[in-house]
Image (tube, rainbow, N blue to C red; front, top):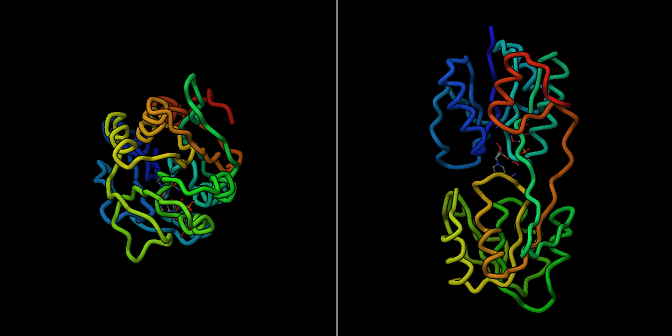
Length: 249
Ligand code: NAP
């Protein structure tokens, strides 16, 4: 019998949870527990880390999962490494549900950088108003360029003072529309956006708004993931679960 562990925290994971529930596939949805009130899922849900790759392997064994779907964010590299290691250890088939990265089109002014440190280096020396659209992790690195005003968009209110001398935080949960993000760029007089190349539709609006308003973007490339089978859409994951060997590794 198929029993699926779905590692979530993305719009794609929630879409897959709906499909699994509709298809009456037995599955457990797992959240890291990073946000205060994670969305409700149509599957039994657990919240919190497993205690590394070893803890995950133990959980897979004890709960009897036959398949693991890694539908975590493309920047959640630790969880993805742990999933690959635990699945290798337990001999459990693993499939990542991974969105295509965004690619620039006509009118986009994007500068690609390898990581957060390179994004900090790419900022100008003269003071600017920067929309730092990277979530709540890695903010402190931008303290190396304290001359800028930073606008943050966070899911939950910050627990303590922001680690940047001149910053405002908007509290909002995506997905956002192009019109909303265009308003944000205009109202906050944004000169530059820093974003992660997350891919997917839910976070794309800021890049479309940037093109319309001719705001340059510093786009952080994805970290390298372990070798694994990848599906690009819900149908691809369902095919994997049906044991069809039509997915590349
Ligand atoms: P990470 O650095 O790769 O993972 C750190 C640790 O958090 C993992 O080792 C694991 O703890 C735990 N963890 C992560 N995802 C989990 C899940 N779905 N279920 C149970 N435990 C999980 O991850 P992250 O970048 O902090 O992201 C955390 C969550 O936020 C993920 O679910 C991800 O999909 C979501 N998210 C991340 C980003 C981003 O930019 N990184 C953006 C949007 C959403 P143990 O080692 O104890 O098992």
